[in-house]
Image (tube, rainbow, N blue to C red; front, side, top):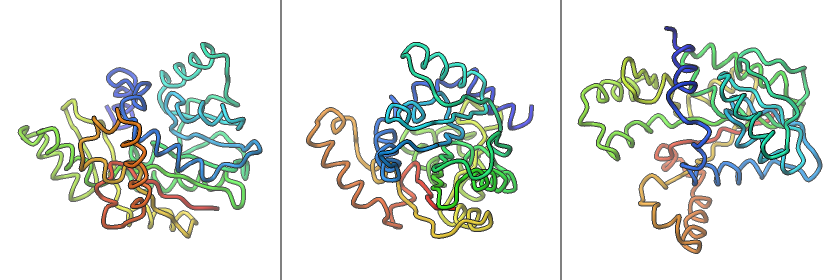
Length: 266
C-alpha cells in the first residue's frame, strides 16, 4: 500500500477527524481567530483545501462567505454533506480530490486555506505542486493560509505521553527529528506526514512564487502548561489566549507550538 492509500485508510477507517476540533479546543479557537483577521464583511470566495469534514468551511459559511471544500478522503466529504443536511446549510461546493490538482479556475479565490495537505505530502515536489496550485487559483492579492505541524511535535508527544517507552516510537521520532519525515510503518501512530520547520515552508513558498511570509504559532506555549483547568475557567482562558496572542510570532517559541501558520499573498 502506498503512502497516499495509507493516509486515506487512516482517516477513512481509523481516526475520527470529525470530532478533532472538539478535542483540540485551543487549536480550533486560535485558528479561527487568526483566519478572522483576513476576512471582510462582504462575502468572499474561499477554498478550504484538505478541509476534512468541514469544521472551518461551515464556520466561514455561517458568516456569509462562499466556501468550496476539498478533501482527499471520501468519508470526510460524505460527513460534511451530512452535516449540511442535518443543519440546513450548504457550501458552495464539495469535492473529493487532490490538492496537487485543484478543480478550480485561475484567479478565483480571495482566500485559500491549505489546512492539511502540506503535512501529509512527504515529497517536497508534491508540496510544491500543492502550493503552485493554491497560487494559481488565488486572485492577485489573495491570501494563502497554510497550516503546518511543527518538526518537534512528536518529541513533545513522546515525552508528554510517555510514548518514549516504545522502541518503535523512538525509531519514528529519531527519523522525524532528523529529516521531518514521520513514517509510522506498521504501528498505530499518526499516519505518514512531514513535520516542518519555518525555514522549510519558507523555502517552499518562495520557490512557488510567494514572498513576505508571516509565521504565527497557533497553540503557542499551550503544550508547556496544563490546559485542563484553564479551559474550564472563562477568565483564566481569556488571559491564557491573550498571552498566546502576545507571543504568537516569537521565533524562540515557534517550535513548541504543535501547529503554526505560514501566511502570504499572491
